[in-house]
Amino acid sequence: MTTAATTTPGKLPFADQVVWITGASSGIGEALAKAFAGSGARVVLSARNVAELQRVHGECLAAGAPESKLLVLPLDVLDYDALPAAVAAVDAAFGRIDLLVNNAGTSQRSFCLETELQVYRTLFELNVIAQIALTKAVLPGMVARGSGHILVTASVAGKVGVPLRTGYCAAKHAVMGFFDALRTEVAHLGIKVTTIVPGFIRTNIGANALTGSGAPTGVQDADIEAGMDVTECATQMVKGIADGVEEIAVGSGPEMGLLELRRDDPTSTFRLLEAMAADIRDKQQSR
Image (cartoon, rainbow, N blue to C red; front, side):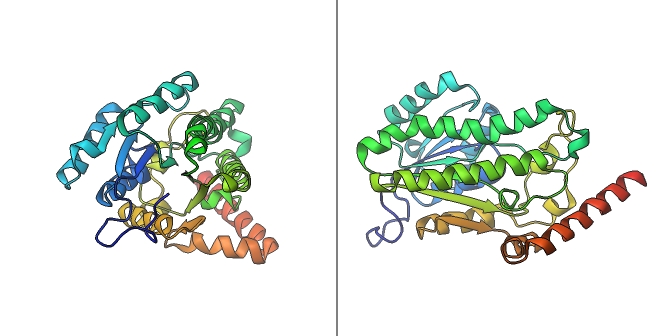
């Protein structure tokens, strides 16, 4: 598979590579779609919201991406029966899939004692099982060609357990575990695996996060609002992918320090996050 390190002079980093992005209608997925389109890739835009996909498609065109290098492919990643036809549609349009970016997902904002079991099922189904299902649908074609690149958007919450996100942290830890293990199994087949570990990025993830009942919070997090610009996030991700980085941590806030602290001093990390949970409870009780 061609990367920035092996492209010929004058070519864009991902020129003519086929990049399929789920969750491409907003947030990190949208920003990645624009970044890859700007790097010369042929980009497949997938999500459930067709109107928003069309908006992203139009903005890619306005930025100079050729119509021939863009494909809008509406997809509900939870519709597992639809995945083979979706893979076939990409193959029919572009002949192959070079990079699959598993980016669809949702977050959570509720304490465990206030969270219905179905919310945990929803978080795992969308954030874990759907990523595995689409990956398994795409892998055979990559194996047959002897090349390919599977990517997944995980989270700092996939490395550190934080309050209000027991289900989200569990799902993202599972994602990290699955794709790290997958890397060991497919490397000899010429297939790469990259895990992406964002911190607080300015997207709508907080407003779309699930409460204990499963309804969206409808309220953005202050931490998210103060986070890294999503375009800068995508730029750093694409650079890391081009450079062959296998685990890409991206963010600009204090949350990124938790990755090192959790590794070097787990006990201090636990106490710090317990204090954070206590502060959240105090604020909730004072309302």
